[in-house]
Image 1: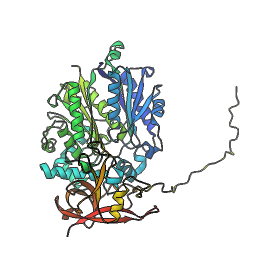
Image 2: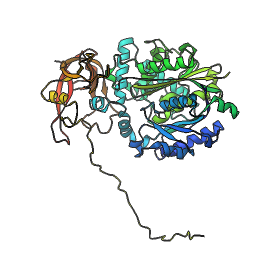
Image 3: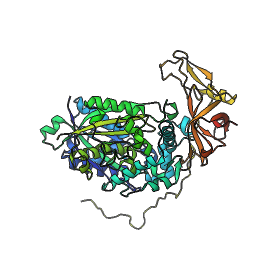
Image 4: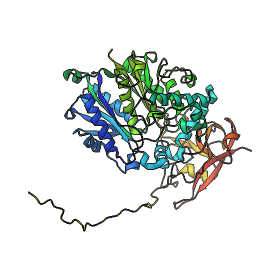
Length: 388
Length: 165
């Protein structure tokens, strides 16, 4: 079985660009990725591409061949859709294809165009990640579902909105130097607590923004990297995927994410590491509470204690295990289909010393990327390790 | 060499797109509820009669919600409809104040939405006649059946809950 190396990655700026098509965004990300990877486009064996709402926002299906064309590659191309975990599932399949010898070079990526829909339209599009008949018709919105998780967490383990505000403040702070981030601005605790409520107890600043953007990464086999003398110090050494019942109400505990726990355990075992080895992580903080639940599902915090991690400084840039040094979905932005691959791109840069925030993890060897779909009915986790 | 001069400059045909387009409502997103339209019509038939029901697996005895066609626990397909309690407790709830998707036109913000624990199962439901500040986890709620007006040629039904008085 061949190790999988990250040869290179590229991102567009995340943010507000309603005029740009997703193929235009993806082309930009792939140009940056190929330049970073120093791999010729002709060597690509497959494109695996994540996108969630292209039918709704661009009246476009059949993204695989369209995006291969945009990227300038002639290879079989497949679209992956698993709501907000779309490109996380693409990464997982890319890793497995390279490991089993099927492919040597896989272009993996994703893009999403969202802001052209407006806020109500993008919210409508995001809502289709829930069970439309039995959740959405009952009035359950996406923020509403995470609000239920937050309320259930507070009820079961304690904590308050101010704890969540520290997650938002931390992730904005981390994004200050990330030129790809949608928000490169600091916020204070009061900003979060005084923001307009969206779905009690969560407010506007507990939520990630609506974003346009694209991400791409060139993954190669260890053999390919050696033969071509690539500078690719970061490997994807573990992959895992978990699933759960579609509807949030069907879970025994609303404040736990079994799908993410399953994905994490599988990825750790696959890489031969455990949670104590993890030095840095990018987790799926679509809402502030989601970061807390992710830390606990990944065993980076004991169940019931993740709520205080940001407030007590355990997950800040200078903490024991910095979380979302990119700014996370909260501040970097969340172009849904791009997010999973963008986490891999940020983490690879952080570990390789090529990220503005690399100084905080200069001794780190092991990083984790956690990507979740819907109310975590699907989740992928990847372990990245760097040669030191 | 081919002639590449603009052959009809100045008198090009114009096409136009309207500022706004009204599209037909191809779908409304509630289930069509009759026997020839859905395999779970019995759920809706029972709701019309005033009963909240769901499927139970005859093999492993798992009770599901929503009603299923195949049991997701044991994969058996020998299911029967059983009655659910019409009273339950708030398992968790929120008040939706903004961020309402387009197309949820039957909901006006603010409204309360909850996971309601009926004992055998939990379900998502809107809680009418209630506000966030007046509710606590564990509060009792009871079933309210609503009739859906909309573009279907048969009567359709759905469920909401209200605080128990």
